[in-house]
Length: 229
Ligand SMILES: Cc1ncc(CN)c(N)n1
Image 1 (cartoon, rainbow, N blue to C red):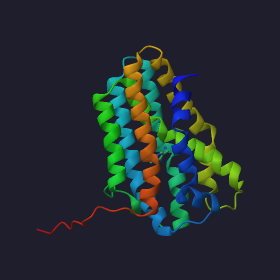
Image 2: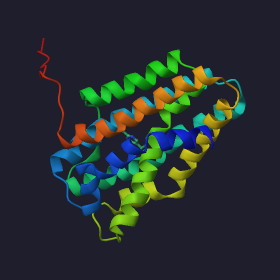
Image 3: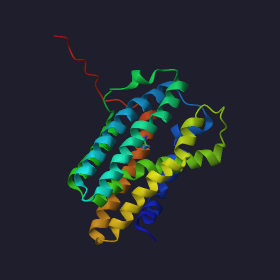
Image 4: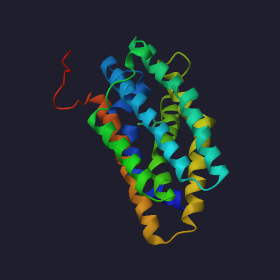
C-alpha cells in the first residue's frame, strides 16, 4: 500500500466526519445561512492567499526545475480556477465577492495557516507535502460524496461548487501531490514518515475545524477598533 493510501485510510474517520458536517451537508441540501457562507468566503479567500505564499516557500525548498514548475502551476490553479466556487457561494448569499476580501483570518483558519507555514519553514519536503495534501484531497472527496449523495442538477444552488471540486482538475492536483509524497516516502525512514503523517493528520483535523469555524461564525474574543489619528 502506498504511503498516501495508508494516510487516507488512517484518517478516514476525519473524512467521514467532514462529509457529515452541517456545513457540508448544507451544501448538498442547498440550504445554508447567508452569514455562514459569507464567513466561509471571507476566511477562505485569505486562507488561499496564504496557500499561495506556502507554494512560494515550497519553490524555495525545491531542488529541481520540475518541482519548481509544479508548484508554480498550482499557484495558477488557485488564482485562476478556485475563484469559481467562491463566486458561486457569493451569488447564493447575494453579496459582492470583492466586499469579502481583506478580512483577518478567524482563529481556526489562522491556526491552520500557521501549521502549514511552520511546516514549510521547518519541516522536510515530505512533511510539507503531507501538510498541504488534505486541502485538495478532502475537497475532492467532498465533491464526489455530494455528487453521489445528492445528485445535483444545474438548478441546484451549489451546483458550481460541487461540480468544481468533483472535477478532474481537483483530482489532478490531489494525485500529483500524492505521487510526490509517495516518491519521497520511498527514500526516507520511519521517523521521517511518522512526522509527515502527523502533519497530514493535523491538516485533516483543521479541515474539519474550518467547516465548524464557518458554520458557527467563529470570531476572536474581542473586536479591535483602530482609532483614527
Ligand atoms: C480550507 C480549505 N481547504 C481546502 C480548499 C480547497 N482547495 C479550500 N478552498 N479551503
